[in-house]
Image (cartoon, rainbow over all chains, first blue to last red; front, side, top):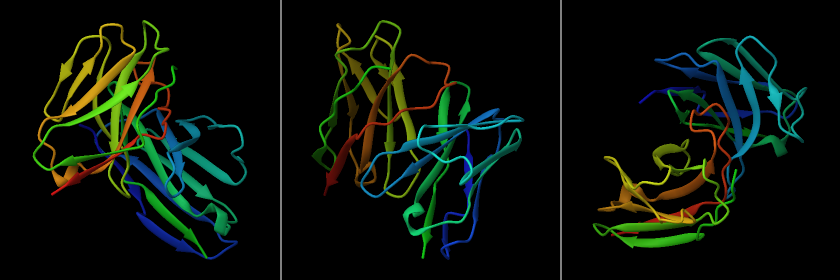
Amino acid sequence: GAVVSQHPSRVICKSGTSVKIECRSLDFQATTMFWYRQFPKQSLMLMATSNEGSKATYEQGVEKDKFLINHASLTLSTLTVTSAHPEDSSFYICSAKWRTEAFFGQGTRLTVV
Amino acid sequence: DAKTTQPPSMDCAEGRAANLPCNHSTISGNEYVYWYRQIHSQGPQYIIHGLKNNETNEMASLIITEDRKSSTLILPHATLRDTAVYYCIVRVDSAGNTPLVFGKGTRLSVIA
């Protein structure tokens, strides 16, 4: 199967700062990547669809100015949480399509203090 | 995409078969059944998918009823490492171009 790598796996930041999370497809090209968020004991919730070379599409209720997505190459999408607050603390997961299946990164646990 | 219903939790003894049910009574003819699992603090992992025939791979078997209104994921010899949340997802897009929509899944606990 394909490998999707996220970095960092864990990050702690101060309230008001910004954090960038990287999602890379290591051995394949991904024109589309998806970003999810997962709060404790809850399921994954789709945040946005990231398209290479164009603007991301955000789900209803997700602030595009707060969660900046950049998909500048066929192997890299980044999610930047701007002006982070404690309520943004969550598990962020990306996925990319290889052939017909979705492969997921290992996730990034963000803690805002 | 059709809605799915899964039991919130199940236990299974190590070495025994784990049978995870999924109800998808409103499934339409062109919708596939997918199974993913998520081990604690990791990203989801693809297990198997099918349309109407039973499927088997190195991880599991998928049994879909003839009317396609329900399915069962079978882990033939569960190990402690199979402890995870298992998600049954029904979707039209077998090409994978649209995102997966996750429900609450079944939390499987494999017990020694």
